[in-house]
Length: 277
Ligand code: PXL
Image (cartoon, rainbow, N blue to C red; front, side, top):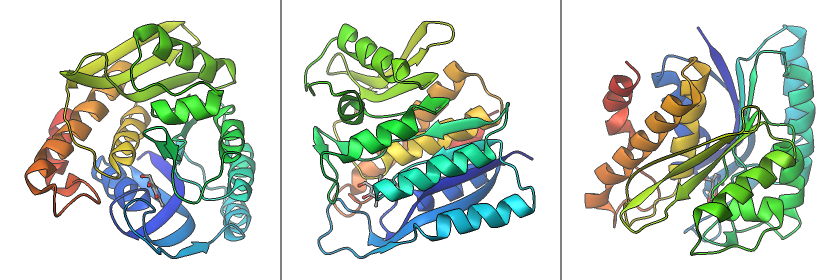
């Protein structure tokens, strides 16, 4: 059985980070260890006055304990990290647990729609960029890719703009990069992939959905990381992750007013298992 460790926060209410990654990775038949970096009462978007307990000091202690038992991971999957110190600890964790053949998968969850998430200042992306530079694959959205590479954020863009962002992300050190929520025309949206090792680009898109829910980046990242961990090739893994995320959004649309805090991915898990066959 393959094993992923996911390193990100627990948002107790609102579906994102560990409450999305753990059930999806487990459903895909992969063991999922968790390293919670902080505990929040809710995610930081759309809720006022959320609590934040910083668990930074536990990160090196947990790593040291696991190391004593020679615990290994096929994939190290990082998501939302709340402070620069957490990023430094996660970089140390990767140095300890990296092997020749495991995958370091970094989702630099920190911004969307041209803005940083609540609680982050403009210096935060430079810290996240350090983590991205040692990744085998990074999966930012367009806003995050711009902040990571000091590029002007654009609402309207062409293929050249996206390819340049992908190039900058990999020039900075990541071996592969995917930019999510890329839409060149109103009717379609998808993810753009670049592999520096083969100099190959690949865009997979499907019908556009005019709705935004929290945690869809985490749904995409969890399924993409899971599919890659199962040995599925990059193109097919990307298609499965995009298709599943779109299915989750479509399934939640009829209840968008009572469900803006997350998608109903739970009800879509049987379809995910079909996609993996
Ligand atoms: O979905 C990314 C995410 C993860 N964790 C927390 C967040 C967000 C996005 O807003 O606030 C705490």
